[in-house]
Length: 137
Image (cartoon, rainbow, N blue to C red):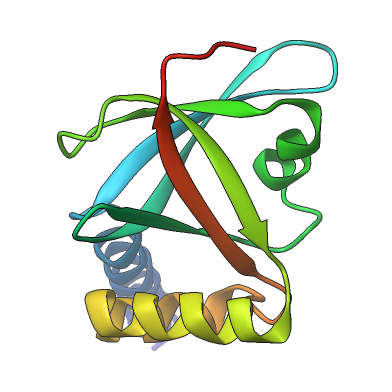
């Protein structure tokens, strides 16, 4: 009996981890490179939305390390999904910016966004709009 319960729980755990990995990493992911306060490079996988010439990211919870890094620099590097390059950025942390990026993420990622929203606090996220540049910090 105990063996069956443990096996069932392990199966549920594997299913949870698999669904979470698929939701977070299966497609539509770029790598953003920022610099920490002490100058170390930090690489973070993030979702993005591209509409025409507009490229938008969700600046997650303000305590997220890569989001904190944004206050230390004026450009970030992006890699993946044919978006490789350096970008300046503007942030919109207003309630309107939050609603806009949440709507964009839900439209693009669908059930994946719903799943991630269950696991992570997105209530304080904002819109991060990227602009291509040749400038380096």
